[in-house]
Image (cartoon, rainbow, N blue to C red; front, side, top):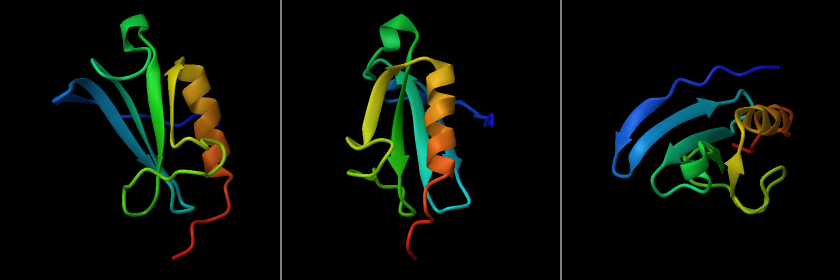
Length: 90
């Protein structure tokens, strides 16, 4: 499955960000900016978000909460895994 990401420019820090929400209650923030891991190589960073838009730590497939130095196809693969997670409790 391929997910459409709509990037918006950010000023602080300078770069781009897209937020995508899944039906299971999770979301992701995908960024590339002057502070993100791999940005100087044109790579992306992804963070798993809970319903409150806080980074969700200790949850597969992003156990550290944030992964960096990713190519877009890797971001899409992680998003597919998140889409398949058990719905977040309400």
